[in-house]
Amino acid sequence: MPSNAADKHAAPPAPEPLRVPVADSHTHLDMQSGSVEDALAKAASVGVTTVVQVGCDVRGSRWAAETAAAYDAVHATVALHPNEAPRIVHGDPDGWSRQGAREAGGTAALDEALAEIDRLAALPHVKGVGETGLDHFRTGPEGVQAQEASFRAHIEIAKRHGKALVIHDRDAHDDVLRILKEEGAPERTVFHCYSGDAEMARVCARAGYYMSFAGNVTFKNAQNLRDAVAVAPLELLLVETDAPFLTPAPYRGRPNAPYLIPITVRAMAEVRGIDEDTLAAALGSNTARAFSYPR
Ligand SMILES: [Zn+2]
Ligand SMILES: [Zn+2]
Image (cartoon, rainbow, N blue to C red):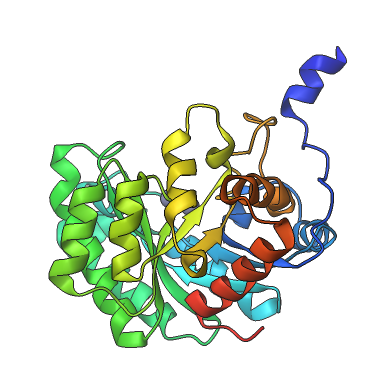
């Protein structure tokens, strides 16, 4: 095979290690190739010593909770992804929920899945409820009702268990902010893969919401994200990979993993005009505070 074709899909090289350790506040190890051990070792070798493993459906949430129980470096969050909730109600759900939907059907299947998320959310290694929220990009009008009901239920679960809420907001800023206000946001709320602009960052800052930036902050066309990084309070900034998605430039399109966090940290430090150690120290303690785990 010509080496160019191989390179396009190969794992990017490890960046220069960070001197101050940080956490990847949002990753999907279960969607990445290779073992959990290798992913954690590779991440730790560049200063990414902690990861938050995010559940997107019942099966993935169970896996996240088990993995967090098995590894000190892993914390879990559990949820039905905003695009998963309508699938459970309307059929075509993934994995575990397929059987549930066939047997129970409609909103009963959603209730059943939510009850399992509620049970998992009580576990000590589960530090957050999410990713939940709204996705107007992938879910059409027919799924809006189920998505909203699921989001509201997750907010209630997070508050009842005193866990962080992890928000997935795709093309739905106003509705997400409105529903958070209507329900009353949990004490600790994280906008994962923050996708708003500077103005929304000011709204989030006033509400005390954490803003977690992913590799797309390095994309040429993402000036709105860099503007948001610039105005967000330092104590509300987080960094994440959302791996295997959103690989930072110049490796866009290649597989992402927690060990690539330093690239995004450096891009954020440059935008804020601060040195990377200062930013990394803030990111490390912010993530521990957001998800309430000891450092
Ligand atoms: Zn997401
Ligand atoms: Zn995600």
